[in-house]
Length: 354
Image (tube, rainbow, N blue to C red; front, top):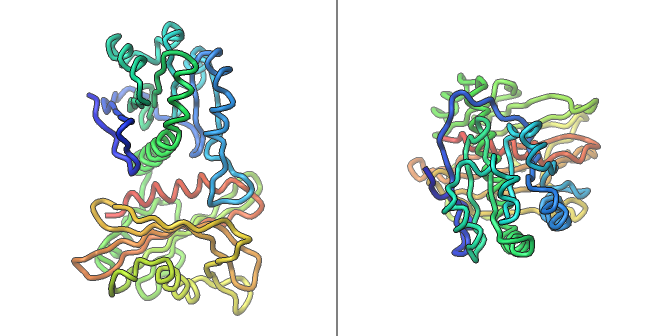
């Protein structure tokens, strides 16, 4: 069955469809967050290679050192079926000239649908769910020839990125909470004390609870480098719409972090930096499961020390309690410019807020 994928940036030129026919016998998808398999025939890869890399390897705006949006693998159909068929995020490029080579990937479509998509003058994305593996999305773009495909790809590049990111986070959330246990004891505590709750994966540990502020942390290593991902959950009274301003949200963040998260040296603590030395801050108003939400990406530092890292903070209105529910995730990974995948993990966890 085909249906629309809802995203924040749906445009009239652009229709996204999705198949949700889950096959129990499929293997689990593989691939780390932030990785993308782009599949087409060799000629199409060669013709669009520069455009593909310019779009998918563009640096993430809110992180330093040019960390790319995705890590790319670009197989032809034969190598895809041998090595990458069960990757969780796949982007497929189809033209009238590569239909024979791409037959296996085109199984879900009728000939009439393929002809219509190839000849459509607008950029149309189609998405098939769980096609070769569980918790997988395969996203398609069709064109008459290389030039037509290139024009559509460049015209719709923002929508393509938004769609792939949204689907990656959704698939990570679905896979994570289907296959993993959670710290369920704290879910009820948070629900009772805060009004909303969140599912915290079992590989996080409770770091501290104080004044109904919950701090969980995952300590791990990447290569030989230690990394920490922290989660903060709390609430506070809602006064008026100014509570959703950047200044108000950061003031409340700093007041909580100052007493909760101390640095290694006496008198040091976590705060939010506005220094131009760090990447720009971003604030978006979104709808989170029907609730008004302010989402902020920023940069934390330990005052008095050189420790720093990115954070994502969700502030969600709870009119039934006249309060604001807060979920934040922050990353500390010194000397490694691979923080984007950890931020996407935090966003996948945020999908469990209920």
